[in-house]
Image: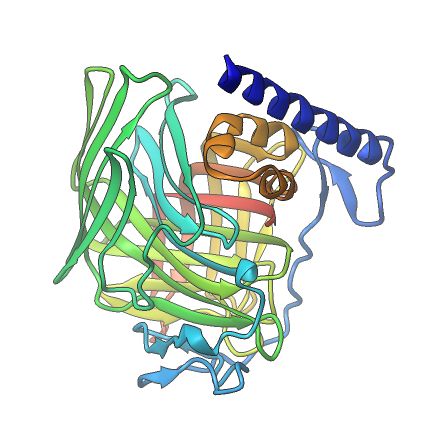
Length: 410
C-alpha cells in the first residue's frame, strides 16, 4: 500500500508541474520562419543551403580530433574513421556529450531501426519494425536506463551492448560484417521481440565527417550506407525474414551538441548495373565549411558531393521530395510509401513515466520532461541520376531508402 501511495503522489506531483508547463506554453504565436506542419506541429523551417561551393577537406590519415585544451584540432571528412577521440579532453557539461550507434534497415515491405544511445541525462536501447503495405508500426519499444550504464567505445569497430535485466541489444563487429542480436519485452510481459541480423559491409569506404558547432563543440559522424541486411525478427509467433535485397545504414555518432537542434538526413541503397550504389545526404546543423554529409558510394568507393538542396512539403510529408546537388552531380525524386511520425514531447514522455519513476529521481524527471524529439521519416524510392567523380552518369531507378526531418531538444 505504501508503494502505491508513493507512486500516486509521484504521478500527481509530475502532473501538476507538467500542467503548469503546458499552460505557460499555450497561446504562443508563430514566429518568423515558423509554420504549422501536417501534424499541426509548430516548427521552424530548416533553411536551404545556398548554392555556393564549399571546400571539401579530405583527411587521409589518423589524427586526434581534439587539442589538449579541448578545442577542435581538425575539421573535414574521411573515407575511413580516422578521427581519434580522447574523451578526457572534452571540457563541456557531460550532459551535452551525446553518443549513439543507430541502424536504419529497409526493403520493399518493411523498414525499422535499432538504436543504442546515451544523450547525457539518460540512456536507452530501442527497436522498431514498420510495415509499408498496411501503414502500421508492427512494434516500437524503447527501454530506458541511467546515463553511464552503457559502455560506448570511442572507435567504430569495437562491440557495444545494451542490457537491462534479461533484455539486451548486442552488436558485434567482425571483418566485413556486423552481427546484431536482441531480445526485448513487448508491451506486456508475455510479448517478446527477438532479432538476429547479419549486416554485410559491401564497401570498404564510407563517410566520416566532423561538423563543428564552435571551437570546442562538434559532431563526429560515421555513416556507412552500403550494408546488406540478412536475418529475421520474431514477434508474436510471426517471423519476418530479411534477404539480400534488404539494406541498412549505420549512423555512428559522438558529439557535444547544443540544447536545441534540427537536421535532415537521407540514405538509400540498391543495385545499379549489378553493383551496390548507396548514398548519404544531410544538413541543418553546425558549420559544415570543411565538409558536408553528402556522398555517393559505388563499387566500394566514396564519390564526395558538396551541397544537396532538399525540396519537400511540410504540410504533406507523403508528397514527393526532391534532391538537387549544387554541382549538378545529383538530381533525385523521392516518392514516399510510408511516413513515420514520432513526437516525444511532454505528452510523449508520460508514456515512459513508469520507467522514469523506476530509474530517476523526481528532480531528474522534471528535467527529462523538457526533452523533445519530433521526427518525420519517409520510406520510399529514389529515381533520377548521380554523377561519379570521373564524370560517369548513372541512372537511379527505384532505389530503396528513406529521408527524415528531425527536431531535437535534449
